[in-house]
Image (cartoon, rainbow, N blue to C red):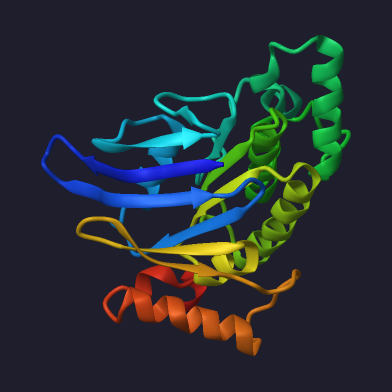
Length: 252
């Protein structure tokens, strides 16, 4: 279990990004974090990843304190961040170089098959579309078999059709190994399509304003009564001044 206990973060400028964040994330759960810009969502993810240190509180994974990057915690950023001088296959296998060659190659081949790029491992990142590059980034994170995978708005730069395809693809990849996923997103529809629970954050300082369970069968579709009722709950928590920052870009 991933546990955040009274987590707080104040930067050297005196700006308090997070205050009193307490959460428990269950194994294999998909947890989405939504909120307006400046509510500390990405800061929260960086703290869980061990890329930054909290000012107060602590983060535990199965009872072990997280104080630095940990092999059991992977992260996917908004941009794919592929290494231009490595092929697709080499990018996917970058984080498992310590494994025996046969196992490494088997994992990479399996990952290429799962992301629909079998036979394209020798391509270069510059030859990929945006959606393909983000698939490779997901495969690179999952091939190491992390217990927790953090996703920082991984589909925000993609067009609506590619984003929908990758949302389905993420669920398919998750279903195989069922790691714990923590997804930061501005898109309420995306959160409700993917997550088991949704954390709604407010700012000044960043804090948890609500935690909603999404008890809807998958696959889900916007427009159903239950889906739209949950969406209205989230919008009500965000308040009128923040709603525009937490809806899909296409709807703005």
